Image 1 (tube, rainbow, N blue to C red):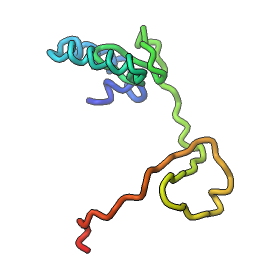
Image 2 (cartoon, one colour):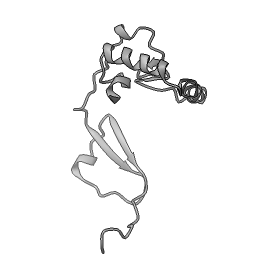
Image 3 (cartoon, rainbow, N blue to C red):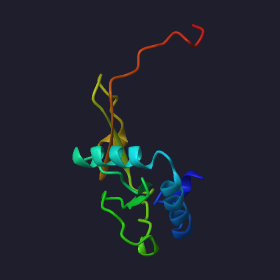
Length: 116
């Protein structure tokens, strides 16, 4: 049940169950070391339970899972796709600049798997 480890969709009951499962896991020490490695380089786990510890959306430790509240996701915000490879086609929607951006890399090269 992956939602048990996800602090964006689970419940306090599922999160507590995930913490118990983590503490019974034989990989707990390795998982905790990996989490500490990520934290040391500035990539703290976000909105998840990792090695039996809950982390909020900002990567901070959640001390009490009963008081953690799921941050609402604004799915209605406008989005602008920005390509950083090749020249994008202009459209009317590209004239106004919305608040969030999705940056895409270079266009993919054909793989030859489409039968052509």
